[in-house]
Image (cartoon, rainbow, N blue to C red):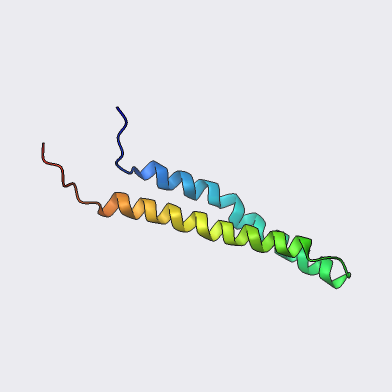
Amino acid sequence: MKNNKPTIFNGLKYLAIALPFLFFAPIVITIGFKALKKGHTFLWLLLGIILAIAAMTITAIGILKISNYLFEKDNEKD
């Protein structure tokens, strides 16, 4: 029987997934701006912005899951 209660590991899993995005997004954005200086397309810059938005979203979901675990009231009475 599965338990639907949130666990702290769910939130930590999301934060672990977001960690590479937090490192690679600024690198790709920098590559995008350097490519714009050389007259290339917006592809790298657009990809970097999408990665940055994904990093912020995944981090927020992870923090929400951890805060739900920490502040959830147990309404079930055994």
